[in-house]
Figure 1: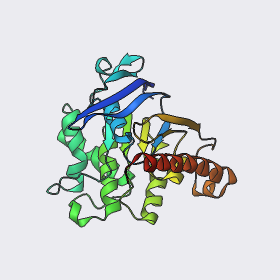
Figure 2: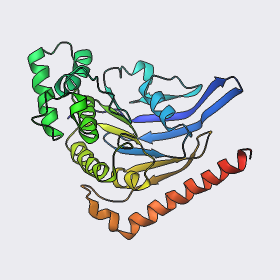
Figure 3: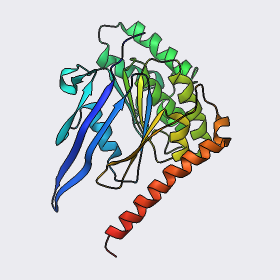
Figure 4: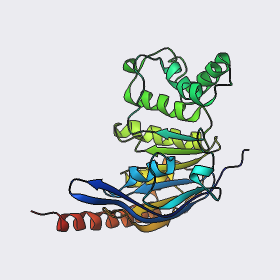
Length: 268
């Protein structure tokens, strides 16, 4: 089992310049994420959730504060090639087969591995995500859920230490979404990675996570950090628990209060 770094988000603030003046997306965000844990971020639209993922990936430099991996600043932690990213939409290359799309990340991050080895590993991951036999299908020949499975396999095939997931199931119908949640729980129990997950679905956050960060309306600040008490492995049965309902309602009240605050601030 490889050694994974803890993630420390230390007093992050992100400001953007706009024609109307500075816009503060995130303000003084701090959190500690244990190795091999599953953290979810929820909050109103526009509160900076995706911005936070961009900071964690190194794509965006914060205006203040820093991210530390294993106690070292992100730029010094050599995390390039160790962070996977799953987007809201699959972002598959339409001219490449499912197999070729999964192999894409290895072509960039594992150039020392032979073509034959890369292909074998990609096929193995397609089988793991339930797509055995669909190797040669192109994206237009796959359903939305199947495309997202390819995207997930592409992110996992190079064994990332950190997996960032930006509302990956938002575009799916409810039943497919629940199936993908179960699949993600199953896969995460088998892999050695830390997950940071964004969602607008409160039940999804409670089902998947060990810890939930609830953000306020913009500028995004941490309203509360919630420890999810359910043991693993988890199943759909926890949705029927009274404690599950209590936690989801508690988060919902936070977000409703945030929505009311936005409406008070917006001009009529």
